[in-house]
Image (cartoon, rainbow, N blue to C red; front, side, top):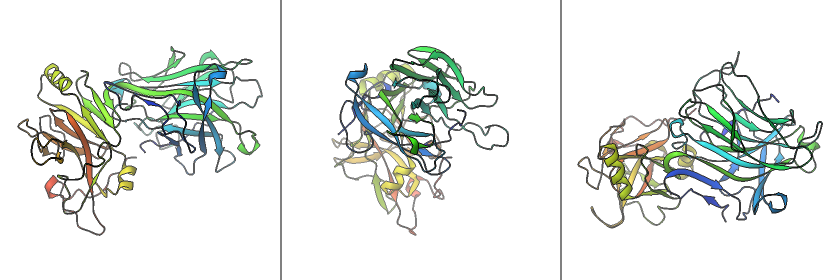
Length: 435
């Protein structure tokens, strides 16, 4: 996972998923209303740790109607730690990194049930956390890595108010929002952080009120949504295990996106629908193989033709750029052995171009017709071109028509020879992993 591990600051079946298959502005919401089996709600997993084995956080569904909530929520608790000094456990929901870039004003939000704080008490503290992409190498004297963790919420070492912290040269450390935590009576609080394209800073909101901004203003994006449980170590001294109750975890942006897809439409609304199992049963006819095995990823996205036409007219151009994000770990598990072979494909379900059920790379020709596009190693601002960005993990194509789009790569048996001539990729056989 991109940014799936974090360095923490020592200063101090389905779960209802709304918006993942929606349209228009990017928005995903987990309301936890549907029961799940196993230690994590669908779409959630345990967060890693950059420097070794991670603490293990787990999730259970809980009825929150008796504590001032509505329906059900999620209890996140610290189940185990690999070292006694560790004082946190996190779970995360993965965002679409294409849609969480600064230009789209991305945001993360969650409702937290704060059971209050008492001086010297043993309450767990909850925080909304994200890990933006690395943008520089500063992390204080003697350090050589850019620590980008952003933490927002309660602290078990300073029980009075809600705080936030974001690393950066000259950063002030933990910042007090001056919003008091409950003491004798537990209460729900909504925590939200939003990265503003206007000033490049992350803004921190408590119950809808802006209570401050990050010191640094050079962020490229926001990362995944993390729910963190903080507690006084050692974990072995806790019974029951420390936990925090959450509800309505959500994230979004101004991007025209859904699932792993995003369309560059100049801010014009384009209906985009994500199907996580859209390629099921559709075969691999037309996919590039280079003499090896084609691997089709499961997701597809579909666009609305009326919206495409309106957006192209408003932008004064004859194409829109469609991007589909992929995760390198997913490629490995699916058997894609060479990332450079990844491409975006259009599925011709009706046989408009050739045989029914054929995949066409790019999906639009340079003449603006439906069919195979022209590969380019770098982005070309013209209709009919397509390619892959292995640094930022997405495939792209300049298209002008609707229906279903997916992505695929190839599996090359080792030590087999890779023939990438058909994609113009001769010599590009080394996988590039992101930092």
